[in-house]
Each structure stands twice: as structure tokens, then as C-alpha cells.
Amino acid sequence: MKTLFVRKSFIITLSILIAAAIALGTLAGFVSESQSALNPDMPTIVVDAGHGGIDNGVTGVITGNDEADINLAISRYLKGQFTSAGFNCVMTRTTQSGLYGNTSSGFKKRDMEARKKVITDCDADMVISVHQNFCPLPSRRGGTVFFDKSSASSASLAASIQNELNSMDKCGSKNSALFGDYYMLKCTDSPSVIVECGFMSNTEDDKLLADEEFQRAIAYAIFKGAVGYLSGLK
Image (tube, rainbow, N blue to C red; front, top):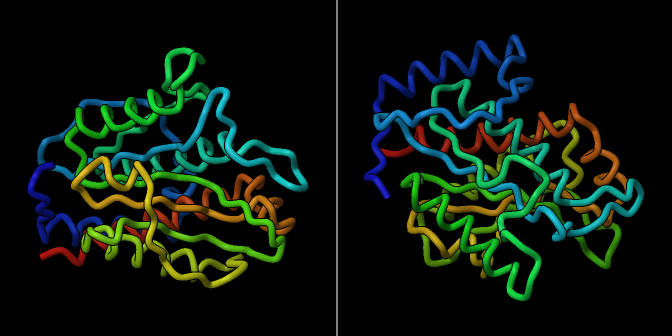
């Protein structure tokens, strides 16, 4: 991991860009899948669209949508928002396929290791893994951010993103960021979070997560939370 240093002048410029983008809606609607050459002077953000291929994740209780597809849609918007703001941004997967190579035994482990390789190879400054939640209690709603309890920087990033999720107009429930014991949170020393954007076991969340406008909005909330965290670094 590079020593993360965000120039004050860059943050000022970025703040102006974000203010203009909010007025015009440009960041919230920009989508890009291309992986351009990285600028060594800018922070590198890895956006990880969870699951993929034969690993569909959870299924929407009303829509029947696969989590993997919702993850990818939101991640594409999030990647576009970061790149349009000048950040380096790398996605672990850009298609519906997984990263495991073949479906033989151990494919899930190979998939996780491939994601770690992407993070390591680009010397990521931050990792945001996008997922959807599921609970036997259908009343559970809203986004929840998970972080590794041994990482103070990840806890701060999680709190910043959670605050933005809770501030959304269509926030179904104001949740708290939580500890998580997950591979994607432990495979890097850089600030790393898992964002469970909503509960596909809840009828209202499931319908919202299928809506492209809401997908853009929740990606933008994640983006703003990440930028808020970066702007607070000394």
C-alpha cells in the first residue's frame, strides 16, 4: 500500500467538482468500465462487485434478481463516479462472470484469491466491496457497512459511508457500521469495507435495488462517504 497522501489543493478542487456534479447530476449518472492507466499521484480505489458466475449470491424475494447482478450494476456506477472525479479506480470484475477460472472444487477460494491479486497488483489505497444482504426477518432493511475491527482506518471509512447511506432520501432504516470477519476485509492493509446496500429479503429494499435510479443514488452515497473519509486525512 502506498502512503496515502491527498493534497489539500486536490480536496478543494474535488469539493468544487462534487458541488457542481450534485447540481448537474453528472457523477450520479456516469458509468465507465474501462481500466485506464493509473496516475501514480492519485489515490487508487478498488471496487469489488461481490459474487459472479455460478456464485449468484442471494436472490430477491420479490424480483427474483441475483445479488451478483445488482452488485455489478452498482459497482459500475461507483467506478464511473470515482474516475470522473479524477481518482484511479479498478474493478475486480467487470462482467457477470466470476474470477475462479473453472467450476471445479475450490472455485470460491480461487475467486477470493483472484480478487486479492487485483488489489495487490494495483497497490490499492482503498477497497470497497459491494454486496446485498439477506435476513430471515423480512422486516430488516437498509444499508450496512462492515469493517475489520483491527483496522482503525477501515472503521473510519465505514462510519463515513454508513452516515451517507443513512442520509439517503429513500433510506429504509438507519443502521450502524458493524464488525465483520470476512476475507475481503483482511486481504489488504489498506482501508477496506464491505457495503451491504440493502436486504433482498425485504420487499421494499428488493424493489428499490432493482431500480437504476436508486442504484446510481446508492453508489453516489458510497462515493461521497469515501471522499469524506479521504478529505479528513491529515
